[in-house]
Length: 398
Image 1 (cartoon, rainbow, N blue to C red):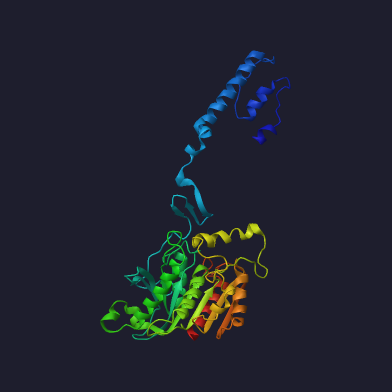
Image 2: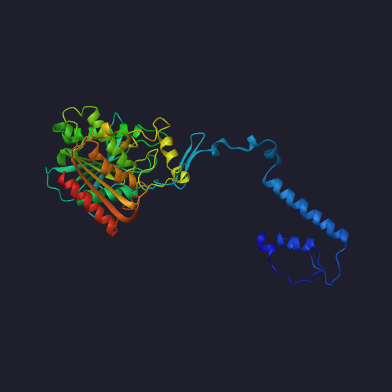
């Protein structure tokens, strides 16, 4: 160790160098009562013994067959295919290890102590396997209709669920603030299910929510909260980060596919919270450093299995203005933060949507001094409360 070599020894300078070296390695040699020199043969024997002991320790830790046959030493289940540090690791065998978004909290069917919002887990579409967590504000009069927020959680398409504590708190807070019925949708995650699986689930969820809101008679018993309180004419698609990307793409698909039978091709509003968009070329003040962009470029390629490039409309709406103008809503709210990774993309979205020929009402809100989706971990902060109020007011106007 370097610290050993920097130590100042008080012993007489006629001690052999081998003893000084042995002390730096943490070994302690026996001392002599007299200040004579150690016999040269004894010194050599001790040095040889130390060398052999060190080599033996190395061979125990790194057996020689590993050097002769390195392939035999590799555990195939430990070779990484993709890694997002602190979030997840994916191994070449297909094993997925998630570190973020794994905590869960149960719903509160009797009402959340903080805001009185009741919540429950439901299966929206058994055939398609679409499930969600529903949130109903406290004190809603029987039969009173409310706007419905179909919410898609973030997590880079790879982590988190509707039961994640951060998203449970946010959805309940939004339901209370609007007030609105919030449907927080679970969807299939990459890499087990690559893009466009998440988009397919999101679109299926929208169709199921519309059907549930319009149900009556015996059909209404399948999901009574939506049947009694969900206003199908006031549906808002919303999401943060990857969920914001999903909300945008569901609205595009709604219009491209000619709408939903008996409903039409427009929802009342779209809320994109710090949306995850990207592209091959930097925008605005986006960093141009290859090392920085190397943190984001491979992520999209991985979650879609290389099927869709960095300028595909799924991730870069600005690259396809002819499709963008077909967005299935006439009201859009975009929020971002000054230090968000995708702030330039959000600004470009807000500026470009009018230029592409889209006709509608756009609202843009940017929080200074905050980072990407800060309102989730800082949900009680002044800035988070202000942004929630902006979202709630937008929903009320839809």
